[in-house]
Image (spheres, rainbow, N blue to C red):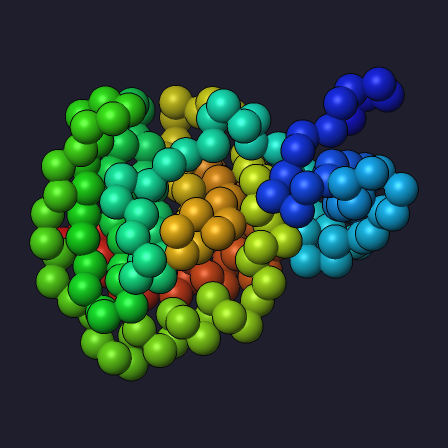
Length: 189
């Protein structure tokens, strides 16, 4: 980030600063006054070959089609301008949404997942501190050559984006969550 560039505002009412060098990315958060600065060890990547993330500009932060309190996890898939969303709810139900434009979408009932899958996904979401990745995107943006995915915890508690070309270079907690998601096979319903 060039010197003098303002930091993006984040949900914890402070600023976020990203510093990178070959093989390392440090993500810091400040308090509201900018006096106290702390390292975010979850989003920081030390001695790795993973990509340096970018911040999602506030005006590009995605919004869920149907964010209700029972939402456990959602994935938004952008495929060359076509936008789809799959949401899993606390009661095991799964819904698919196809966006017509920024404000209109159509819902489809995709059935439900097993209790075992629900518990595994819930465990995965609570084991890692995904809130530390909130507002980060990985990969070249915008990318017309690959699918782009937005992972959303709860009712937009945290949001992280990536494109499929770099999925194997993401931080390990994100790779593990993506593997759990893929194992559910929901994109093929």
